[in-house]
Length: 442
Image (cartoon, rainbow, N blue to C red; front, side, top):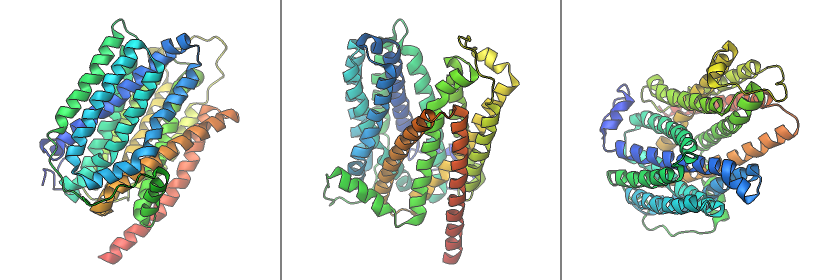
């Protein structure tokens, strides 16, 4: 087995192992590329293409979010079946090869500044990610010891959010520059090619169910994914717990630009700072999780982490109480923002919420991987993708409804605090029941 079998050994020793490092690099480059392309596309549409097409940029950006989520609903069931029927490392290589083709299409869309082509590429990119997800999480327990799963998932989650952060920042910065389109085009294809090259170093895996017959009824099979997982209460609650994280995280991330502008009175650089702090917090919380659990797959820190997210969200509400901004007020810069102690308190709250989020989510993935049968794990991961997408859609709809009802953004954060407190109580009961079952089993 890979290095790091000892739960007390540093999770970073996994980077020395071929059973983890190539998969991590492949995942990191894919996450970076997805968000680099998405950010570049959204910025290009918002600041250039929407005006040329005489279409409201807000409508196009909202449409783009739906286009990206739709493939996870449509293809997750088929992705789970593929991961069970065929050898997984070879599937990863095929999917990364498809990414090169998709990003070549993105180059054409960027050069001709075609909104429709870029939307098609965004859909295909979402589809590629939907097929990669079950492979990424189902390969880990095939290659690693149980005691390595917490550390591996911590690295995967921290790497994912750092890749999202870097991709989002650089995509937005590069695309509107003097050489923006050629530079973005070269990077999306180059990074895709690098991810494909890295995938060749992923070791082969066992084939779980080579005799499987494909079932193509999307709605029936998606419902079957959920129904197959639901009887396993510990696994299903872990799936719901992960989806709740995406519900809360999606709410915060989607509101950062308007929160920075309309509540704080700050420019877009401060909104980017919020994203950076949130991503770093999740990465730090994820990495800290392995040190706390010392390799043990356990959900005992999940309820306290959820409570932490709830309590600090309440503090964020109080630190966000400001006098109304005067009409036409000039937006403050990032240096002006950092000069205020109250604004530093906002950053500390965002860091605390996201740090607790990292502690919260890592054990849930490890629980799913360690307690699912090998033959079911890809399907469980596909179910997680479906539920995550559903919860993100609900988050978007709920946030829109609260804004339409007249709630301010800080009040929305307060609502998230209350709902997360309720979720923490439910999770606490589930963890307590599971610990009792484990003691009985011993």
